[in-house]
Image (cartoon, rainbow, N blue to C red; front, side):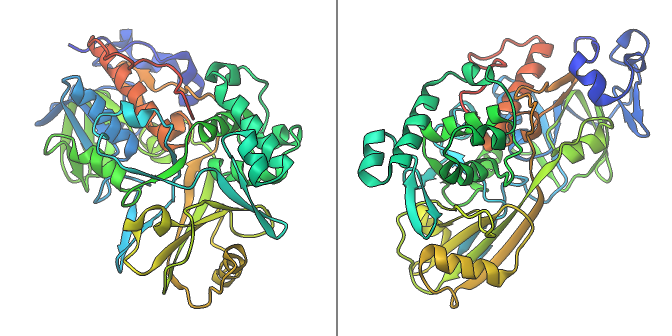
Length: 457
């Protein structure tokens, strides 16, 4: 038996925007608390299709939550409106090239990659250590692991940055979260390393104006200092594909549009009703608010990813190259086939470029890439331009990295909009949501499945 529906957590009273009295008489699991037309917190309707938990959304968070729940012996059905799993972690195939749509950067220090069932076979392809920053007509490597190495290869400013990152990497997360909070841009002005830190933070946060919380920014730098930036071998879609492949056959149902949700019932447009003991909303923030009216929709950062192919291999060491001039359209670029050879056919290179904003003129990008790579780009082939207007949720101050995932017994929300807006955050929120479901079911949590802050953002 599911525990009775308890009251909405205080954190949700403002966010959901409806009074607690609407939970129904006594808050019983069969009370009908309307959230708007077609939306109820619970229903007595019976459906032929049933699982302990129905998860709406087969992106990274939804699939990871399913992995955790099934590992604990809970039956799960995952419903996805699209024809494929993965959400924003999608990869296109074109003429032997593998093209990521959003271009997420992972880090080898992401602890949730090891804590999420189903990802043991994930192969990460790391970039060269640190990053290259193009500034004032020259390129400097930033992020060397020790001041001595930085001094040997560059300037005193590089050594200062390396020493700063070293100190940051040694700090516990709780110490960072206790710091005064402001925007990352405001914090940066006090540190005197803006020429290098600004393009690095913009790339890590996908925030060109650095309006992100300074605490989140410091956690991102801490993660950068502790590991190597990396991408999944074979494209971003390899990660959700592994999660989906590790689930029992029939768990994930694609092409299923959800019309309304309740704690014990999900109604779809063309595939009938799904009964459940609990519901997990694992969609993007806007879609979640559409199913749960009143749920806060954050602001977003838009990202454009541009893919070029070269006719011959482009010599490159696998570095991520940051453009230190904020007036230029390019935020960062890399020869992705040098990082992950599976992304391009033999004898050709794939150059992937990220713009933190709407698509700029193609010629302007090609011109800037010619300067950054010090090579002619007129013969490069434009493969694709992918624009994501809501690529990642914004994280302005004050920002809570542990936004509640449990609305009430039977109703949970997870995704990168409940945590850090990274793959680490998406996976961590999934583990938190699964843990909340299991606690409400009275199932003992596996070791390490608690609600603690992740080691890195």
